Image 1: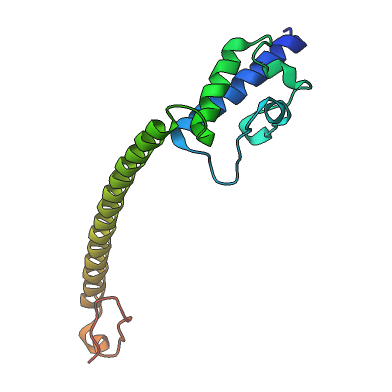
Image 2: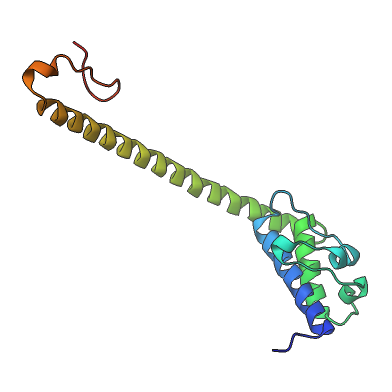
Length: 158
């Protein structure tokens, strides 16, 4: 299997970086990460976790460079991320609305999970109580009074 040549590897690296920036423009920059603001930073940007590799010359990402389509996408993403250029206020307002909606949905999911946990907890307590009662009924009568129930298991101290 042939590996891609240097030019193809550079284009793939550029494309991957642009895809990450476009995602961050939509979803926000993850904690602990930072986005490059220009071609020189873009060329040096490396992050093995994100499969981002550097290339030697910032000219690769210049407006008149070999990949004008990727440069245009890079410019658009960085304007949204860094708030430069026209339309960024509208994009930020949309992002705030989207995040508010996502927050509302997550809040509803949290409440649903809390309810589910409470329901399961009550069911578990009921079953443990029934199991403890059944075990005590199986013990001969003269020994039942001598057994101490475990605290929190539904038994009563006499």
